[in-house]
Length: 275
Image (cartoon, rainbow, N blue to C red; front, side):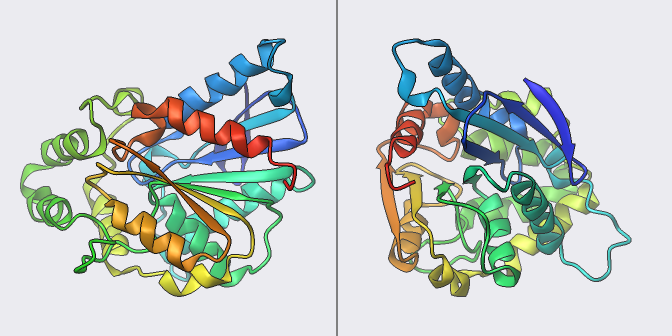
């Protein structure tokens, strides 16, 4: 695995080929949440019987300590705009490949922020894993789970950091184990965390969905406590060329707890002759 820096972000490359998966983590994660996907494609490449996947490059991106390096001095950009610009620079770096970005959770919002200002991106297809276009509670439960969000916000200052750690363990994973929390500093500093939650609360990028002009695969679990399955259905209805893949029993950490299903779907995408 090769470590390179793009737009000030640590990016980890493995494999060679004309098709490239670029994996972006969500609000509470880092590049290690995609370890099982990276290992899967590396294993496939070393298996001579699996020649169909021999031309895949994998890049996992670390957006730095759960987005905690958003500078206080930035005045002309919101939190989302600042990090979406990083996404753009990373995607642009790999122009010339058949690019398939994979967005988990909050990074979907950053992708949509990017589409607001740059209508054409050098990507061939996109994958949204447990993603959302808004974190606003509504009757259809297409935003962040109301109980989780309000509990997180109200107890944060009093019980930080124990409250956010316990909430993440209880809501993100069916197993209650989050290895990436042990590998990297979590959570970020309180002031930055409050800024992030404020961004999530006020952001609604529903209007951008209809402008997506590439095939999009949406993967969503039935037991997601952070972003309910209703959001997966909501995205499918509004993204023109999208397909929804429902993972029975899948939680928010789909790429870990349901990695066999996610990996199978990603491998099927690489075999699509229209790519």
